[in-house]
Length: 56
Image 1 (cartoon, one colour):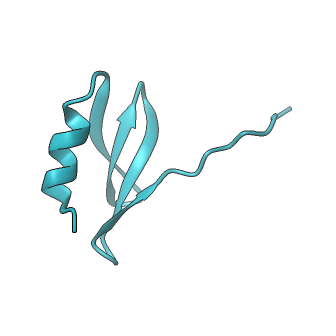
Image 2: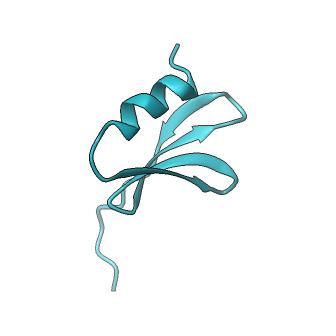
């Protein structure tokens, strides 16, 4: 099982990534957009939902 520390090392090794928080949980962003959250309830990662529709 992957841990938060393992995931942090992998993600932060990529260019233009940063660690932040969203809704009180650790999250990782690429170019300012959320890509992955750490679910503290289940102690596991979950990916950010992707919106593919058109707004407006």
